[in-house]
Length: 508
Image (cartoon, rainbow, N blue to C red; front, side, top):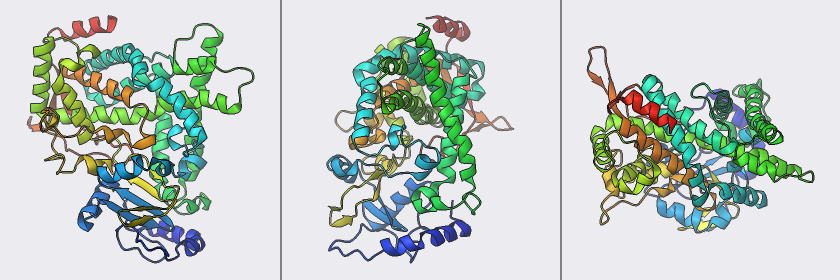
């Protein structure tokens, strides 16, 4: 999407004075990293795309011949790292100065989420305290206790796919929401149309709308001073509804758990554990953490995990040979009709490789979350000023043909040969001190859902009006979290007596 003339005019008008002060010629012996030539007043505002930014930044680097590229947006420096080496050198080895977050004004001011959504926290004592509490509930030894919840949700997903296969994208989101709701709040979601998951979806739709409509305001924060009636700023009026939906979800679920504790009928959950630790002397910050941490766990992972599993269905439709090989492995090792459990993970190496390939081929967060540099830095002869917004282009790294030959193709076998295997795509979850603490939980959920879907169903292309196969496009949405563009397919049971088998599985 390109900027409209009114948006460019607004950026110029409001930011002129700030720009004059900030856009001084850099008196430094080292240059900025290479990038498009900036224009007077607006810098690179016209160069930075709002659609598929990861593709554009990868192209810049390839054309310039640099694994680090730079743009300037009215005094705001944007630096993109297109190689794993650059990302590791800066975001991991120099994490003490690259672990901050830029303040995304749409989220922090309009949605008031900056004080309780841990992903948005600046690097500091509050982040350390909350991160420690988050990790305490998400470390590898702890997430194993969530596996019965994940297994129950995976079985329910199979039934929903059997019952209404055309709604597979909604069923996947419901499964992820069901697991997150149970782990965070101890609430067992209804099989379909659960009101608590509906609350979460309304909240997430608000976040998506705010981030989409307010992208220029995040890049040029001074535009937040514009009144709602100014061209391009009308979404600020809608933000009141989005903020209300987010807080209804967070506070409503917190109060529901408090009631179950008061009535001595609470189910173990992260929220119940944190509320139990509160006392009459608890500070406002401690109470906010008991509300916000379960809320972050519930909301933050739904989009990314759902996107990964929806991309999995797309991959199975587009790459039937990979689907067949995974199904043959399940049938030969576990038996045809057997529904996999977590204990089967190591016995299914191709399926494990398929999960790695999925996270590489369709990485859910192509640019990750932005980092903010807190001190001036020099890297490979380039000057990166303090305050720069720094992105790791995860998509570009995981689609580098030098590391992953034929990167656009879905080829799980690239991770199987111990002699020549490609490196595992662990960077899907971020870098350094800001790596996603929920990654172990997410991997468990993705693997189990994949294994059970493959054991139970064949995923085939939809058919056109003449009855011929009509494969979907290998296309993904342009957003912070990127899943496949909605598509149609045929989901066909592949095990005998599927209805009876699924009903029995639901009773386990």
